Length: 111
Length: 113
Image 1 (cartoon, chains in turn brown, red):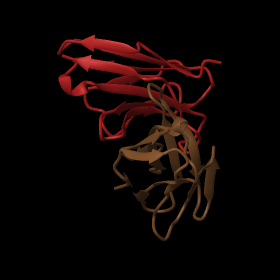
Image 2 (image 1 turned 60 degrees about the horizontal axis):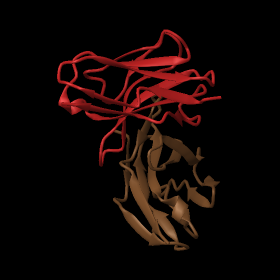
Image 3 (image 1 turned 180 degrees about the horizontal axis):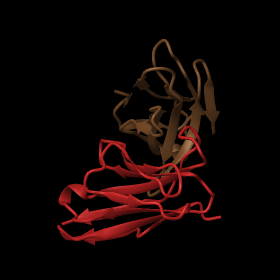
């Protein structure tokens, strides 16, 4: 079935470090892919998305490229800030009116 | 414009008790969802609705029921709570397709003793 696999956390970085959070998916066809972010004590909010192969989603300095050949959608940011500390979820649409979420990766950025 | 709101924010139940969680959205969205979030497991879909008067089962529907009598409201019911239902529950809505942005409520933390 459809599934999303994320790297386990927590990921601990110093401010201004480069961030990569890996995400791979299994699905038939070409699902839309998403990154959602959950700040402490809040619900999830959409960070970026891509709807077809080779698309690059970007927002707030974060980027992710839809790689069909490697079934991946890795999240990157060139210089993280303390305010980026949160839990990041990769997700795909299942083609059945629902999203499948990964287990989440906690990012901790230290000053 | 409040977005998605959830009531209550916290609740403690005893095994066997029942309760209803209320989700309301003011964005005129067609689709609404109930998820549960457990440590290390991400979000799992309980039930969803693609319009007023319609509901469908998600990944983990057992022990829950839902209703969507009004477009703006989506209710999640627990008829006989069990400790395994201790979780954080999130409601979300999207305009009219699953690939549209989902807007999440702040969550309800439920503990079943």
